[in-house]
Length: 193
Image 1 (cartoon, rainbow, N blue to C red):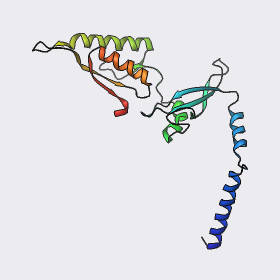
Image 2: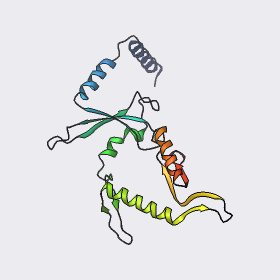
Image 3: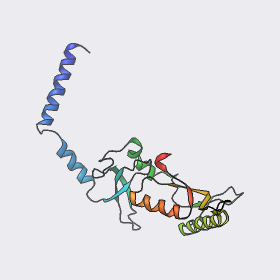
Image 4: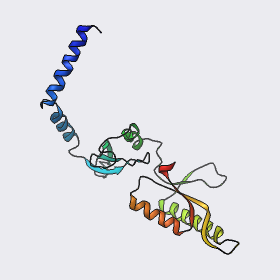
């Protein structure tokens, strides 16, 4: 780059930024285009599922859920009112649209019987009932009420819990209290993983 090209580029940049600071920026026009694009859509607030930061996102979808207009998310952005990310998203959060529309995304619980090579789809009610039944059986079989010395401990050592860090403080508190009330000692949070 020659000295003359450098001075031209620097002068143009200075003039452009000065005009933007004086109010001649295209921000209002860009905002109108964004507003027009999202006018008929439904806005849904959610939390990014990727990491323990728990960034707030806004998802925009079109469609009413009827047969002729299936609801579909077409735009995702950071939530400017969210205290964690203030409207920004990392590259993983910015790619959530691909995550939602991926043909490989698991949307239903599946079960693979011992020794089987096939996964079979099951309902949410059946999955939760199975989990609760297995937890109850394991707790009944392995609950330790007292140590050999006679000290009361009331603990359950054969099962652990990994909590979601994208939950609110209140949900985290209730999850922790529920698991501790069962006697569970192995309890950790995704934020530490």
